Length: 308
Image (cartoon, rainbow, N blue to C red):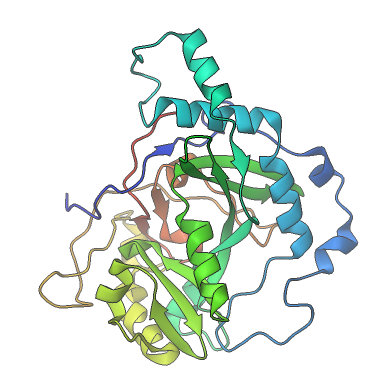
């Protein structure tokens, strides 16, 4: 197996896997008309830009994270400081519960959509956006300054919390991109975050700089790059049919060169009734599938240690 990326964040396993399936009552009885409202407010999207997630959906996802049960789970996430539940802390359950309460987790900022490289764009489909919404993320801050990102997806008209990950990359990169009038998106296969701005794909992190250079590339050049990387790994390809589903690593010797297959990952199923597909437990642990983003074979977003 090839090491895919350095561990930089710890994560809680999908709350679904822990038996915690949380859906807000407001989302369950959502007003269908509200979904027509988008953050773009009728403006024509820029070339290659992802379809915006309706503001009403983001508000409902935000509400799901405010559920007291979710915040309690986040409090335990902070209290354990990355220690998995299979290992005992030096304190007992009562002390852990008090520590979780003392963390007093609170939401910080807006809930943001997280966009991921789109299969149609990789394939070169005319008019395909560079990325599509995969889930939403809400940044939560603890009393001692720890931060976490709570992931939510829309399933059956309601919003469900599926994961907690340490840090706040999703919200931080979205804010950084928006500040310059662009849209943040990720290429999870190489753990890279970019901003699409004025027809160019620009790097937001070190992995992206290794991918496209410090000055970025044109949208057309980026399409050629990802087609070279993943064009033979799309759904229906031999790679996909054989179930190889490995990751992708940039060649350290040649920027943008093909890399070896990494850790295998199961395919993540999409919720076809939503603009944001469902995220499976595997994806929430950092092993997401290209198919989850509509791209095909499995890949790793982050190597994360499961703790809940």
